[in-house]
Length: 481
Ligand SMILES: *Cc1c(COP(=O)(O)O)cnc(C)c1O
Image (cartoon, rainbow, N blue to C red; front, side, top):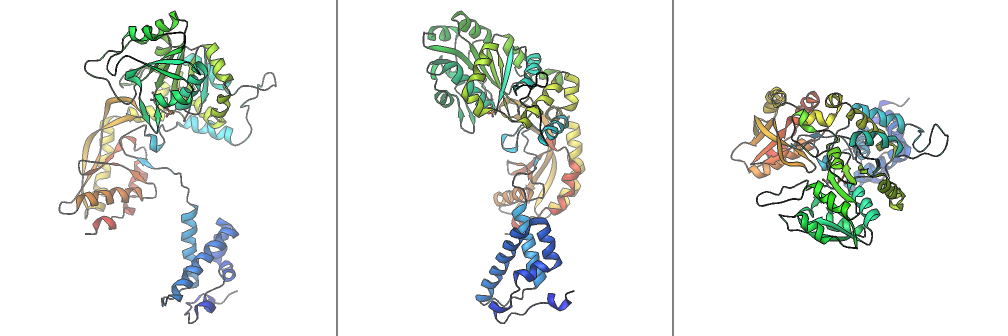
């Protein structure tokens, strides 16, 4: 056993001689505990860095006294920080439910369990259990998607951007695709229809004007170079005023008269009519297929409430052609995505069950009164914690669905507004408040609006976890003059 003396403060007259050796630190119980968690290599490196730093300070004439346990504790802190996961859960109180930067749709338990079940080991991902031969990974979703959309066939890729790229490249490489000038949209994250067209090796044939595109604009543009007519759901903006759009059934008829396919990029693509849940109507995939679309592309992690994926549903011959495109192999989804998708699609078979189980629908349909009750419950504790820096009040606000769905429709919500106490540099104070919330163990993401820091409680599903970390809020940087 070591004597206690070994662990006493070390006064260091000669910095080179007296700092503890790495081996000595590793042999302490605290050192051994670090090795058990982080491994020998990482721990040794961390200890060496701490000792090197200490030596540098001593050389600079710093007369600090370093204790052996103190140095090990410093290494522990550094190791903990370096080993914390980079990608981690946050509270999305931004007011945007399907927030692309915050990971979009939350998955239901059914999908999470399905992911764990196949991720742990082998699965029949591409193996036909009936014949014992090689199978098709799309087979797990094909039947469900056909039932839910009325399409003849379906396939799945990495995201909707990939679905659009693959569809255009398969149907229109080297040829023209006709699109209305009102639909040449940018989604954000550099997804722009004209650019995707180019990358898919298609020639964009713009028709109509920004605000009005008539059926005759489409029919007059059709020529022997045309590969398809396309409609892009203008998901993140609305055309208002003196506008005219050609109904999908008309575009489909013009395409079919010319023997061409009609492609629709639906974006959010709900599989059920959201009006039954008291939400605004968003065109469903089934409606779009029914109005004559030969191929429909949509996202898995928007209104569908599933994992990131791009789904393509439509005519069997066209889907087969898409699946034979070598790019499909490069854009395919993995087993975890398929497992989660299958689970969320299965929930869609029963709209009542979907409402109870879909984590996304649960958030979108939360009642304002329930949200406000959560905010009122949290108010006293947060007020007390923030007393020196901000006034806190319960507010009513509007949440957005996000991800380009229903861009002008908002959902009545509630939350808390933190307003910096007057007299301080309030712009600075408000940024410091936002920073303090982001620095919590589970970071809290709010939004800054009209001089206040707003926390929209719609997506707060675990208010006790939120309340539990209020005492850790540290506004020291905000309180500084
Ligand atoms: C969101 C969206 C996309 C991109 O989908 P991702 O799944 O984010 O790749 C493409 N088109 C439309 C119309 C969209 O709304």
